[in-house]
Length: 168
Image (cartoon, rainbow, N blue to C red; front, top):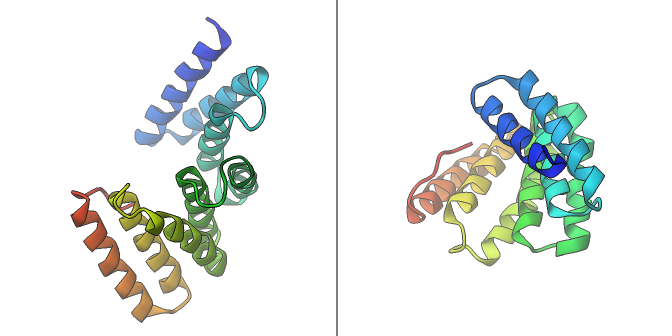
């Protein structure tokens, strides 16, 4: 098989394995995807960034966080600070920081993702809602319970406006 076709096959295997709860298979598939895509595309190519993101999210939070910070840096440099893909990168860093117990770092990164989403709230109300929910988790972690409750209510309202969406 050509390398890029094999990379896509491995990426799909990784996605399926994550949904099935097989994190070892997912991690190996995403790692191979990343190697193959890096072999054929420049480091800042969207497919390389997506492969790096998937690989990072398949790792324990402490191992994945530096990789996600790398993705965020590239997204900011290539797409700008207010691009929807930059919001995704900010969100991912925030979620991993929350998993590492870095409540303040999570609040900062998810807050940035939320600010980007608020620039165009109608573009993706479900993601806007999820940003409010994850920010509420970070606020709860910091003991800011009133803010967390308000954030959850705003998140639910945004998701309802957009037709729903599962809460991550």
